Length: 77
Image (cartoon, rainbow, N blue to C red; front, top):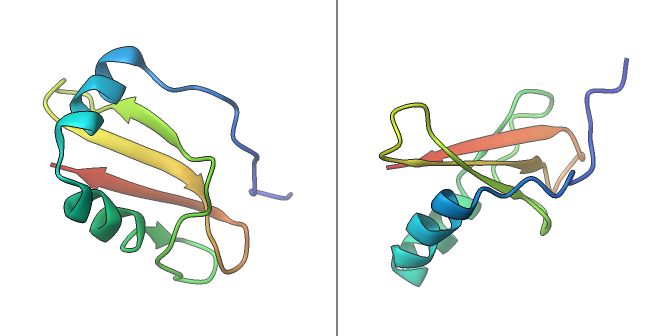
């Protein structure tokens, strides 16, 4: 089973509003400090999804690993 998945275009409006409030240097840090379960890589490819965390107070980024293409995620709080 291939766990890699392309960007499915799911970006939540409220999550995007919160994401845009974060300073650019924080966003760069988070995008280059994600976690890939397949290779333990740390960077996300462009085309990630921006989702609202379960409490509604943080953003969850989900996408593909820049190294191997596996599923990678990052919580931004």
